Amino acid sequence: MGRIAAPYAVKGWVKIQPYTEYLDSLLDYPVWHLGKAGKWREYGVLEARVHGATLIASLDGVADREQAQALAGMELAVPREEMPAAEDGEYYWDDLIGMRVVNLAGEDLGRVEGLLETGAHDVMRVLGERERLIPFTAPIVRAVDVEAGRIEVDWGSDY
Picture 1 (cartoon, helix red, strand yellow):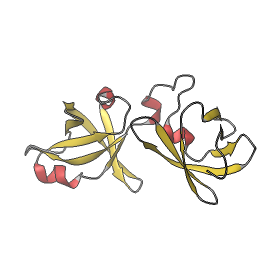
Picture 2 (spheres, rainbow, N blue to C red):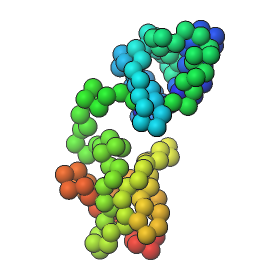
Picture 3 (tube, rainbow, N blue to C red):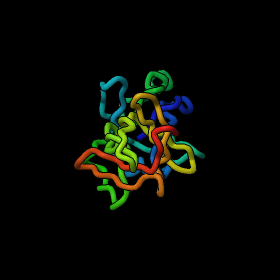
């Protein structure tokens, strides 16, 4: 849901680059998980607020600039069960990753390996016989079947 970008000031605060749709979404969670390479640790959020295009936060157990610097580059997550359910027609990125992408002709274009936020719309990074960047927007995305793990797109195999 974000990453620790850098320490902020001298009292252990950190600057966070959020990956959320709304800048202040992370402020709803009293506990954050920080980690790298699948190793996560819980941190209580003592105080946090929006600061320009980022967030700044004071975390339990992080009392000085050196401790804050040690967290730089770590990914930030919250437990999935604490997140609200996605509304109809909306999906969490991690629900889409790994899904097969098939075009209207029934051709398998590969699997979603990740998504990119471009400002205008999200873009799926699809790996098959080659990498494709496919906008995740209507009218390109025709159907998403989460149970079947399949996304149907109006996208030629030669694009």
